[in-house]
Image 1 (tube, one colour):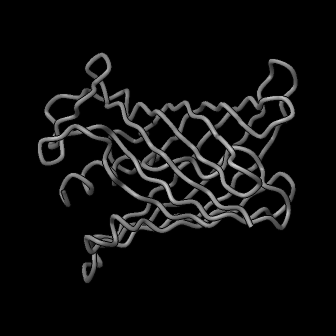
Image 2 (tube, rainbow, N blue to C red):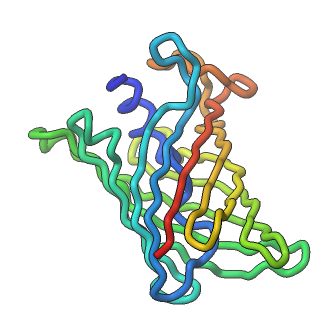
Length: 212
């Protein structure tokens, strides 16, 4: 399990759900716990990688959100994982034109007592969404892009998802992601279970948020 999590998720920042789909508003706050990743066989069972992310989110303005996250799955295996970033909502939905946002984050990882293990990855995401009139439900789509210093220099993750509110405070997010579609699936340290066109891996993530 430890080897699967480290190999797959240090190279793919799209584990868990996206930090922000639509703005929560100035001064508003939320906490999100999400889990997911590429589908692989764990102890003989095909399932999404149970990689978890716990994030705090705050509205700095009506169209800018700050998020800070920790990665509990990594921490339980002796690896510190954190992320911090901003989401800027640039365009509201108008008819068939979706709302649009850009997100920029920094991810950092560190294995206990090994300074040489420190890794830092910039990540940029572009997310479009369509909301249901008069409701807060949203369908969204986009791509997450992780930048690294070694080839491949850009690891991107296309995604589609849905944001479903339950009452005024709880929100459920579900996503389907195609991890690293530009890379061949074969000859990997971990065997993917769903490999579209022999490239990358298909995966799923789910997250629950509480607004306060």
